[in-house]
Image (cartoon, rainbow, N blue to C red; front, side, top):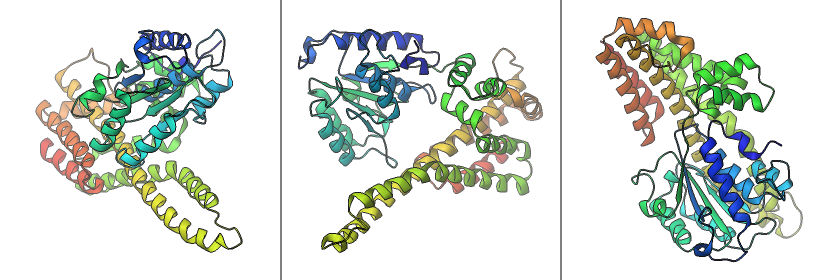
Length: 403
């Protein structure tokens, strides 16, 4: 029988550890203190790994295994609890993620309050914190307080691309068991794409080969024509960098594509949230309270729309960052070709001819300067420089590096 952990690509060691922990969790006596628990199962976990390695997927699979109702199989993937956890609708699994740039104190407090109660339907109250590196000092301290003195039936699953204490509070990190995921190879990504069905095998193989082990990116490339078109725009940029009349407009197009992608991916959820809020506040009703409800709803909707705008900004940055990683990968391939390194797999095997031609035309130091300019652009966007300005400056810096 396929289980929930089949969704993890190339992470056999991680699956073994989490399965053992979920098995140990079943043997715990309800209400037992954590200090008396089986050492395989702890109350706080930190999932780390490079982008696309499956940190959040691992956390949700573990949450499903902990709540699984099957009497013998841990994380069966078939019971109601497994289905609802993976669908994000389980009453006792709470997702805490940035609604904008950071995870705010008010969001942490709301989640902790819900998670402190007894489980309503499952074995555990589970808090999954996506992008824990985006906790602010205040929200991180609030979460630390409850992690230090956890309720006996609450489990915390934190996800972050790094264990660097500059990104995650060292005290929060030290109270969690680290599960390090590695970048899956192309074969593992291809298998993960084919496991879900509905994807052409040839396209799955191509997407796995060009996604640098990023499973989510591979799935988008395999299933979404617009994503493939955006990648083509990104990888065209190095080939026209010598021509400012083509390079700068193409860079603007790159930023616009990231904004459109963020809008397309967030709009359905944004509209649903607004409609649910208006319904919850009684907008459209009749009676004495209808007018007051309308006024209150207007303010609440305005606050929600502000949060949604912040979330779209974050999505735009994330989309643009993936594009910049693709661009850096092209110049990396060019650098390897220029140095004559043949035993390292290219990031973009389908563009090997173009990257080799560029690598043969420019000295390695110049190509390395282009890569540095891309990294500086990524850092600038992360500290709130407007993407259009940052990318335009990057194009200028690359042109200068290449001479």
